[in-house]
Amino acid sequence: MAGDSPDVVIVGSGMGGATLAAGLAPGGARITILERGDYIPDDAPARDPNRVFRNSAFRSDETWLDADGRRFEPGNYYQVGGNSKLYGAVLIRYRAEDFAEMAHAEGVSPAWPFAYDELAPWYDRAEALYRVRGAGDEDPTEPARDGPYPYPPVPDEPAVAAVRARLRARGLHPFSLPLGIDLERWLAAGQTGWDGFPDTRCGKQDAENCGLAAALAHPNVELVTRAQATGLELTPDGKRVAAVVYRRDGAEHRLVPAIVAVCAGAVQSAALLLRAGAANASDQVGRCFMNHNASALIAIDPRFRNDSIYQKTFGINDWYLSDGDGGPPLGNMQLLGRVLPDILHAQAPGLTRPVAGWISRHAIDAYAISEDLPDPASRVVLRGGEIQLLWRRSNMQAHRGLVGKIRNAFRAAGFPLVLTRLFDGRVPSHQCGTLRIGKDPASSVLDPECRSWDHANLFVTDAGALPTSAAVNPALTIAALALRASATIAQELGG
Image (cartoon, rainbow, N blue to C red; front, side, top):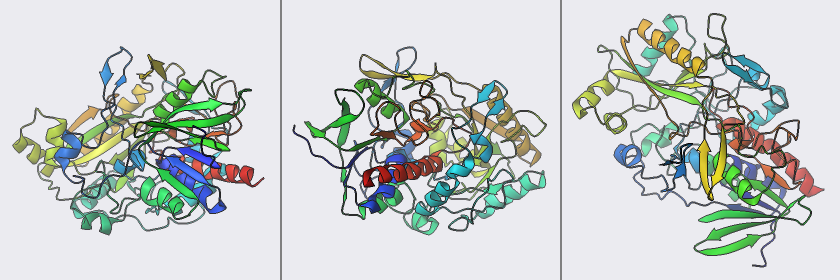
């Protein structure tokens, strides 16, 4: 195992790893990306709701331990492009206020080590890379931006437009979700929504189709699939990572790079560093695990006919910065992808198929997101070498308030029955925070450039680096952080 010596090894090809590679590739550095999974095949049952939502055809057979030591399937995915292959393609910026300290009903969301203005130009570049479609003049909480979105918003279908109009008539401000979707290409491959459905390179602007594709267009970038990183070796003085060890097809391999970027996801990246005893002088690796408090809502009106296909085109941030009555913030609402009868029956098997079909035809489906506050006791640990997730929910008072506001809004808009369901820990609702950036090496794992305080050549640019969860989808913020870190790494390699 003498080991190859690329300039950069990136562990993971999800949003953080693929975008980092895209930012570095034009500089000519020799980059090796290790991905534990493989490509989703073109002939996969990608549009079959029963295979996707009932049989979990695209999940691994991996299990983790919960706080009581019971095994559960975490709902994470391992393939080229990571979890972005099945994401809802909402590519929204954190609000400017999310970068400052924000008081909540049950605690405080701490300030980032820099303000929104520092990340704004990297958001611009990330939106261009991921070909985001949106409108900048509909959401009162929209942060300052340097220009319009790269493409106009994805249009509402008639049924969805009618719901948007109903909510607007109640004084709310529905806005077009910033989306990474080529609608014509997506629908040409199948008449379904994209939220939760895997992409087979047919229109979803995800980590594979955008970040990774941009990187692999350069001859200096190599992707190694079915390659699971198993260890990091440190130099004798502990100040640098000397090598990355991975297994592929039963054999062990070793790479000796100048720079290592761990981008395997908030949980797996933390586990890799814990196994290596790396980057943890502060005892913060794995701590402050956050997972959005999230609920699904189904608003039913027997007079309403939902004949939409994709549905997921608008959100509401009226309760994002306050509860609307002068109280603390509650969170974001956005439409879910269309909940088809088979999906509803799979998620609620107690419903008969005729009842599930009736509900689907007469309902609009929404998703409520509230911020999960960082708590050092909410953490990823290793127990007998296995991952144990000790998630401690926070800020649930705000989440209950948000669900109540949404329920009342739909009722006022003519939907008399609103069903709700809180997602539990088996649903990965934007896991983040286990390797947080910060100004103080005593209370963070990474510096503001996403570099380990302990090892000068180790970076993390996945969701683990996020110091707060905010209350919007994190994918674009991860991409912006990765592009920013790529500039730092490129400068170092050039020097």
